[in-house]
Image (cartoon, rainbow, N blue to C red; front, side, top):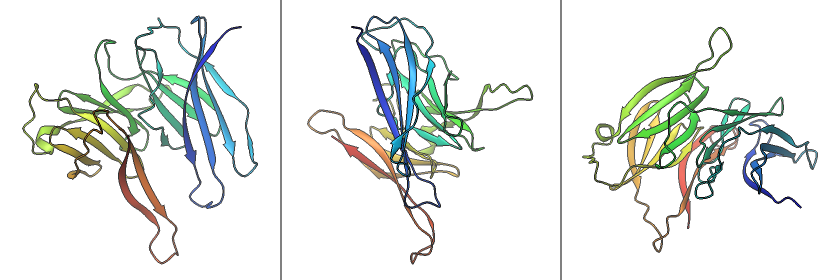
Length: 254
């Protein structure tokens, strides 16, 4: 019997005009215990039909498997919805991005725009670019690189560096290399904001338009770093207040 290892992530989707029905999309990286195969899998549940759809899969690139740092779906980084696509970041010895086409029910594995050494820890996140397409946020020391994919006339979609943000200047902080590195706690795509942890506290940075304000300091609990999840509340038009989004908040789970 061949043992199968599956690491799953998920997302819950609801159409803006439909307050009753929703979809649950699960995605995962499936790998045999002997590392003889690997594939990305996805499946969607519809509350309207009350059933799961067909299992979708695509082959995962063959790479050396390091038991000390296996490639898995990044559990600390929720999926990001960009148009009709859901994206998840992978972490481990082979950092890539999983793309799930909700309309065509197809999967793809996308490369990232920067080189990452397997022995170093990096802070990065999938995001929406300023043009509404797929973006990639990468922290390099105390600057933030905002990348985006641009489709050319031949249909190729290379990564292009959109802008670089000097976080020390933006947050009015005196950041030094000997301090604890910055950490991405979460990204909320509907409000286009990112939460960063610094030695001075937690900052929420709205990327477009670019601004920042100190939100709250979140310390560790009993020496264990909690997980943080961006939360965006919504409300329906015609219910006494104007329709739209009610901002982004950060929830933590010890």
